[in-house]
Image (cartoon, rainbow, N blue to C red; front, top):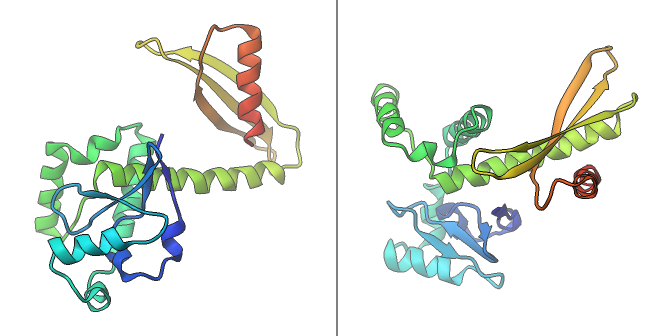
Amino acid sequence: MASTSNTHLHQKSAVWHFFEPPVEECGKRQSKCRLCPDDKFLTVSNSGTTNLKKHIKNIHKINDLESASLNFAPQPGEYILREALVKWIATDCLPFTAVESESFHELVEVIRKLDGKITIPSARTVKRDLLEKYSLLKTSFKDLLANNLSKISLTTDLWTSNSCKAFLGVTAHWIDVNWQIQSRVLDLAPFEGPHTGINIANAFVRICEDF
């Protein structure tokens, strides 16, 4: 699974106005150019952003990054849209590529004509946004469990898909301060190996230790 890096948030370079936050895949940090019509990803070096600057200057003919970036800062509406897309993808259990389907873009085109400009992010951008949202919600959930005053019960469910991929689900249950029963899924983790008691116990412990 790809992971995201927040290193770019602390960068002073104006070049980041032209690139999406880096995504780490297969050991390489890559960032998508916002100016390229297609999904153009460049490798982000830990030592600097020289290759990103060269791309902007050589391909897009922008030499003064500072001045150009003032007109290229993401608009509030873009963040609102991406937040809504993440909720839609996660709630309806849709693939990241749903934002790239022809019918979806036709719908957006109709909306754009009715109500201004809308830019749809790529599937990789939606994936990154979803991972970031998951990380935030997971941290919040950990705090909720840590501050919980009642005992917590855990249930498990070992499930195998039609494609013969096994998953172990773990759900936490407790009673909150208002005497309401609460339930939250801790994880639905891929399960490797035979479904023996020892393997199930080890997978269960790994999930619990993460919280």
